[in-house]
Length: 204
Image (cartoon, rainbow, N blue to C red; front, side, top):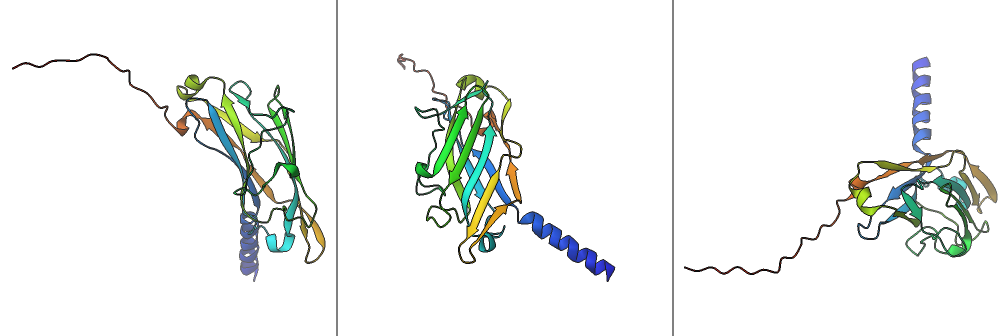
């Protein structure tokens, strides 16, 4: 009986661990001419983490940091983060988000907030939005093996859901955030051969 109980507890623990809501940053391939590097902010495992129980996400907040020695970050005229949202993303409009960028410290604060029964609430896995880093030294970036971290700030993540079927609100605690590194290993630069304006004649 004891062995069976331990096995059942282990299975519950494993299942609970596998059902954590996950947030992670996914850098794309850097443009080797402009130095622009798009970064996706993705969410996964929301269905497995209990979407049917929790309902939809109406509030999501977090902060992340980037290396200001290696990158700048694209911002709007008011100093907020230049966020790329569209119909393919989980967040489809800028009207439901607030951002703040501290360019000196390399800290970005993000907040998504909609009414509890809003059609804009998040109810599935996918890409939340994208933002763009810009390398300060494009050629130096490609010629280096250095890796630059992008990190979620410690204890900055807050997720609130609402299940309208049972009129209940939840604060989701089981969230795992994955940091990542940006490095020149993503893609080799495009090299253009020099043109030589010379002709060669052959004779028998």
